Length: 194
Image 1 (cartoon, rainbow, N blue to C red):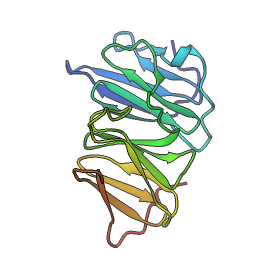
Image 2 (image 1 turned 60 degrees about the vertical axis):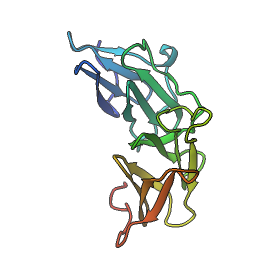
Image 3 (image 1 turned 90 degrees about the vertical axis):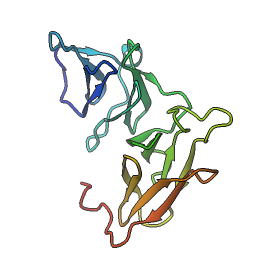
Image 4 (image 1 turned 90 degrees about the horizontal axis):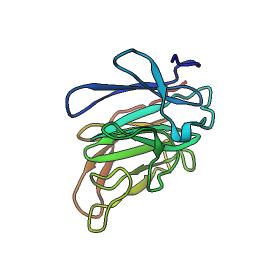
């Protein structure tokens, strides 16, 4: 099967055996590539269509362990377990609808939130859905200055991109979870956005 619409985001995930799983999204559907015959299989929630992706947006994906998480503004974040899933499903939690996703340390971070674009939200420690009792909890941070959040770059620490500023997010133990500080001499992400 070929993808019937223009590709609006793609991603590859690495399985524990070293093989690769390739995913793609269109305006209304999610697919996985069959690595043997190179055909695409629709693997979305209930095999129906998703809310239409805005013309200026794309699906974004991130891998967290065996989970591939896909986001776009008009859909609850979707999750696919690359070792056992037969289709994407709504990510439990429930997490907010988001345009962007990143993995910072051992947390999934959502930004470009449909409900509050000046806020980022992260998962519990080692749990993309919620933090179990006694763990470091899921929480969020709102930024009343420097414009809306345009994304987060992940890794050992995060970099938050706003319209007129960039901030670093560094994991710290305790109730604070992340220390967030302004990066010196930055102009924000205005050149990175359409």
